[in-house]
Each structure stands twice: as structure tokens, then as C-alpha cells.
Length: 263
Image (cartoon, rainbow, N blue to C red):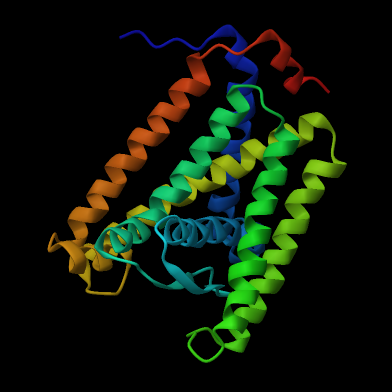
């Protein structure tokens, strides 16, 4: 099967490649110069909010209760929930890694079909803002005697979530169109790269330790080894990214949406 980049997709491809190269450069530089890790720290927090928010969304969709969502300074996160049943438990456990990939792919397709980059940024900011306010602040207060969240974890979640929400909203509201386009492409790349790196790390952890993880939860619920679930998630993530990139490269968009890439 021949694979050809559509002519009208080339501006988007350049945009995506630029965002990807910049993202990779930031990660590489932070690896060799630890002091520059502050540059990628907000991006890691963003991906963590998407990951944990995906768990929350899965819980809500399956009628489960959520006690709290917390994000830690080390960029890890946790969602405490009460699954409504066996399927709910599986769906919630799968949602973190696959949800991050799905969100990044969604932003790719959003850009490719010419929807407003500003609106995409507002949606991203709104998602983090809702997760922060409702599940990072209000639910821990409501479940103050039942939640596992500490005051410090709630405080960091609320502060970091508020800053991310404001920053992403500001990019959508106050930048030029071309900069908003790049901002949304950049967020998409962060989700996809984080998904790849996180699943690689999860694979190594599952292969060499018995540390608690979403894959361990899946193993306990199904009897299938945790590492098998990691391989399944990797496969599904690769398929989602492949579909998203193919749509990004070859699908035609309407003439009206070409203004997305004008200054």
C-alpha cells in the first residue's frame, strides 16, 4: 500500500515535525543537563493530569465514585476510586495510558481537520481545570474522612493544575494564530511521547519487579500477567498513533479550514 502525504497536509506535517523535534531536543538536553529539566517539568505535569484525568473520566462513565485525584511533585499521580463492578475496574485501569495516547491522537485529528486550534487549547485547559477543581479539590474536601489524599498532595495538585490551566488558556487567548497552532501541536506531541516513554518504563518495571501499577491491577482482576497487559496497551497505543498519523498525513480537509495555518 502506497503512503503519500497529501499536498494540503504538508503545512501540518511541518508543524508536527517542528513540535516533535523541539520536544525531543528538550528531553535530550534535560537528560544531559539536569538543571534544564525545569523546562520539561510543566510538560510532564500536563501529561500526568491527562493520564489521571483519563482514570477519572473512565470512573465517571462507568458509574463509579471518585474520592480524589492527586498529582505529586515527582510528576507521579494517583486516583482513588470505588469501581462499580468488574468491568468498571478494568476500564478504569486501562484508561490512564490509553487515555493519554487517545488524547494526543485526538489533538492530531483535531488539527488535521481544520478545527480551531484556539478551541482545542481551551478544551485542553478546561479538561485540566475541571479535573483540578472538582476531583483535585472539591472531592477530597467532600470525602475528607475517607480519602487517602493528604493536605500537601491536594495543595500541590490545585496549584499546579491552576497554573497549567491558566497557561494553556493564555496561549489560546493571547497568542497569534500560528503560535496557537504550534501550541496545540506541541501538546499533542507531549501526550504521545509521554505515552511511549511511560509504557516503556512500565514494561521494564513489570518485567523486573512486582511494584504496584495499573498493569498489576489488571493482572489481579483478570489473572493475565501484568506484563501481558503492558504489551496489549503498547499494541493498542501504536495502532491509535498509526491511525492518527495516517489521518494527519493523507486525509483531505475542506478549503475553508485552510485558514487555520494563516497568520
